[in-house]
Each structure stands twice: as C-alpha cells, then as structure tokens.
Length: 73
Image (cartoon, rainbow, N blue to C red; front, side):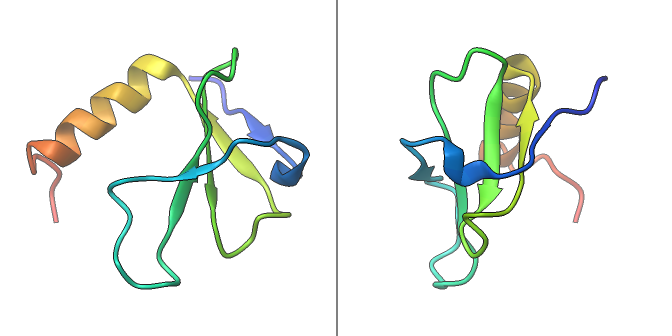
C-alpha cells in the first residue's frame, strides 16, 4: 500500500467528526467525505497538522471491523 499524506490538513474544508470518536473532547478523529484520492483522516487537536489518506475500500473495511468489534485489543 502506498502511504499518502496531506501535510497541512487545514487547506481542505468540510471536515466532520467521526461518529466513532470518543466522547472526550480530546479524542476526536475527523474525516473528509468525497475526496477523490481516498478518505482523509486527521486528529482534531491538530487541524493544521497532517492528515492520512486511506484508500476508500480500506477505510470501509476498518469501519466495518470497528462496528463488528472485530479489532484485537
């Protein structure tokens, strides 16, 4: 898999808090929908920092595993 990053995630608009983020104020993951190269993900505590861009299929698999509680602890 090729790694993709966006060095400064604040250049993009439309970020939303993931519905799977924790309820604590400092544990938010934000995602950006409809990005052509994949699914950008960033830490809400560092909005000017980088974002990782995951292939859409990989992100969907990850979310399905979270929903199914299939990730090892």
